[in-house]
Amino acid sequence: MSRAPAVRSLILPGLLSLGVLAMLITLGNWQMQRLSWKENLIETASKRVKETPQRLPASAESLSLELQKEEYRPYIAEGRFLHQHEVQVYTVLSDAKGAYSGAGYCV
Image 1 (cartoon, one colour):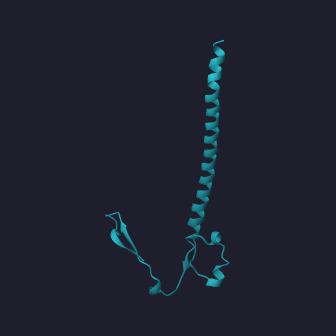
Image 2 (cartoon, one colour):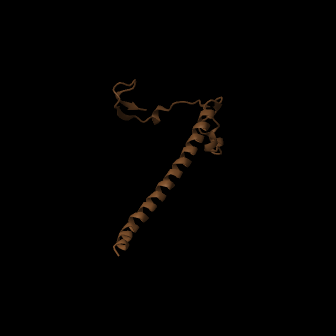
Image 3 (cartoon, rainbow, N blue to C red):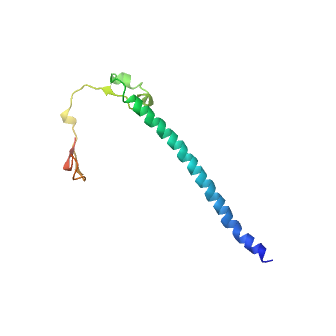
């Protein structure tokens, strides 16, 4: 008779352990899928940045660009800086040893 209550007291921890195990297996599989996606992204980016730079299309043509096919590709852009639309954002860079440190503005 003393054996039945001991078994019953282990049912809940056993079920909880199985639930946690299932969750950990699911998270591990998700991490492996994410690793595969990340490796493909790094490979694609590494190949595309080495391509010959292209001219940017006209603004009307740029609407038809598929951004995923154009990511990480080098482009050549020409234009004029419009100072009247300039925005200055004050910032303080915290790395005192870096080349760009201290207070300043991002334009």
